Length: 154
Image 1 (cartoon, rainbow, N blue to C red):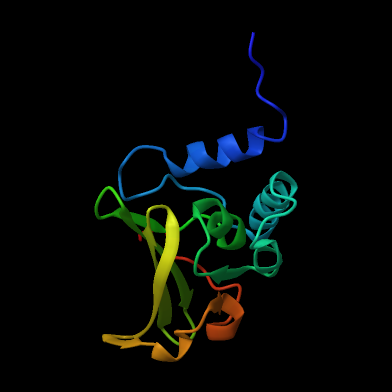
Image 2: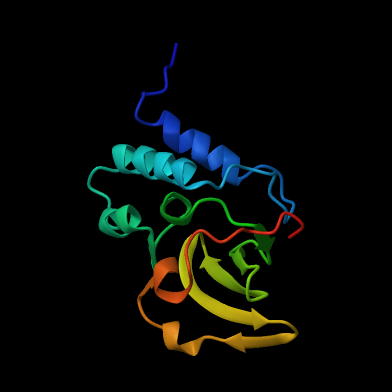
């Protein structure tokens, strides 16, 4: 009888959560900081020599990361858009209710690897692309205030 090695189990659980159905809307999940820290710890334990571990620990996203590394770094996206067999977008949102602004982070994966991203700031009806973040590392802290509420209706 075949038994799954214990260090592979967290990876299987994360993958299964990612691949639930083909719909663009993920089931409602805990996106609290403690939950993301748990994902990071599981990822780092399963990938002790991972290429992107330093970035995952800091909550950063880097081009070349796979789905699991991004998931461990930022948690579950608000939405997934599967555009083709090889291209998928993940969308994260942060809202500042005090100023009625919100930010949208759109990550584009090609063949399960993060290829590019776009950061847009929305203020009322206006949308502004943040082209200053076209660097190699993206951190939420660098472009927005942390701890903002993600709307449930998105």
